[in-house]
Length: 133
Length: 133
DNA sequence: GCAAATTAATGATTTATTCAAG
DNA sequence: CTTGAATAAATCATTAATTTGC
Image (cartoon, rainbow over all chains, first blue to last red; front, top):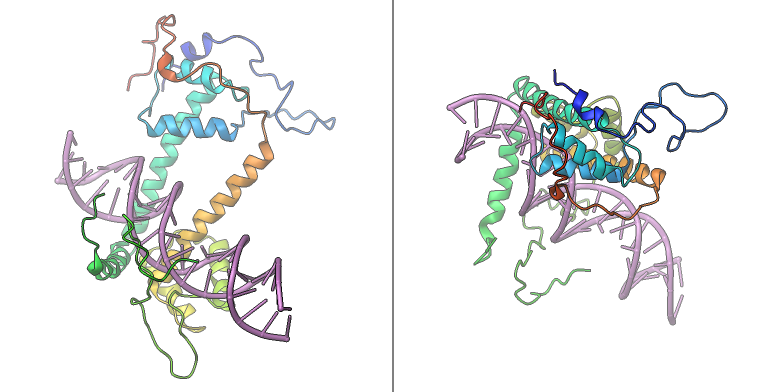
């Protein structure tokens, strides 16, 4: 329940929700109503990097900055960025939750991990000298 | 391709060239002199079918079951199955991502504005509205 | 046809993340 | 803030495909 209004209000009003020129939509007559934002690979890369570097729940100001930056790659609005972070957080959590569930439904993956680790440790015998790493 | 001789003492010296580990069976009859596991076509078929039918990240128990099942076709260990699913996931993702990139082929504009830390500063407005972390 | 040389696939390891429990 | 558990990403290393010269 975050207030998204200030994020979107500061933007230039151009193409607020119209689908005049979509990226790759086939303009074959039938105008698709649902023209939702589709991030380009560059935009995704940027967003993931920002997320990784610590921005998990961006403030309104950060959203404005990120949006401005992403616009170099293509059309994007503040609410897209806001929703992206929201969805990304949720999906990361889902992933973690799913792996917890699968952990409980059997004897824990740790067995497998242990098996692999034991292999590895038996391998490490030949641990080279002076492994500065 | 890689030198088998002691290639100088390279810093990292990834010298895990031999197959001293996992020498499962010398196999007097069949020339099983391979080091790493090589799935048979039947095993691959089974694995792909399982993957397609929804098993993406198998639990330890599932790995055991699948391994037992695949063993009807030839030698296989749990870690092989584990690695197979890991690699398959990763490489399916790669493929998917590559498709997306080639699909987009956006016209890589030059970046005029730089990083986010170029803080716009003028936008201080009332960003206190939401974004409580 | 056939191996040596080269390239493409892919199995196995290491490294960097993630969320959340302590 | 630190650590546990489990990847996914990146990388290494080996095997199969294939190319090439004979």
